[in-house]
Length: 305
Image 1: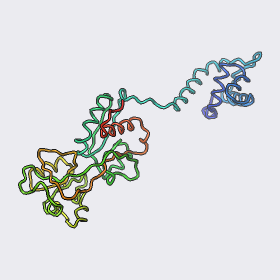
Image 2 (image 1 turned 180 degrees about the vertical axis):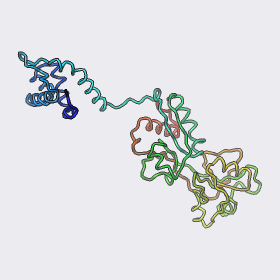
Image 3 (image 1 turned 120 degrees about the vertical axis):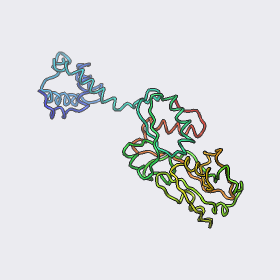
Image 4 (image 1 turned 135 degrees about the vertical axis):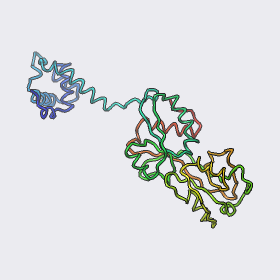
């Protein structure tokens, strides 16, 4: 009877020698085939004999003949080697057949401006793939990526976990907007003038009142007053439309019939939009494919198949 502790003494070289002996049945020819010495073949065979407590191969004429146990072991040893070799063979990824779930986190801005085209491509190219879109939770994003609750996040560098890999998708810029019904503002204004208008900011999940371009106003010597903070751009737009407040929204959300753009004498700073993920997914075929879809959508190229 073979004990488990004895089986642990086996290695791949011994198993390959065993399979070669089954086929060739000659120690010197097996040594030549495997590129080793005949002594090495004999040592591998000796170790296997100790493990299985059987001679395995018996000398016969100019070669060897397998014992009954060796014949019985052949299919299992062959299957073991095939399973091992499969570990070294890259898995073929096919979007059309993948049926897993992929979770993507972003703000409502990307959900409206970027994802529809990407999701349409995914639906066409990977119809069995399930996509879960989650609200971007900045304070838990690092853990969400680490724990696998989020596979890929779309955000900007200042909000992304600095230790995780990322890829820049494009550069976005802000537009100053007021309600399309507003009669109190001109179509062109200075930074000083717009700073005096009560404002709203969008702060996903944190409820901050500073906003993305807060320091830009201060550096210009025109600090602004922010009276409302929203977690989404859609809520901010609805509020701007129905109040006397103004705000800054990404240019991808313009035009919007509820808003009127105010052209400023100076351009507020823009921001990079990036994708970020955990290190363990850097070479994941599905993550790589979806990242490529994002880039191709932005660049206006044909999507990968």
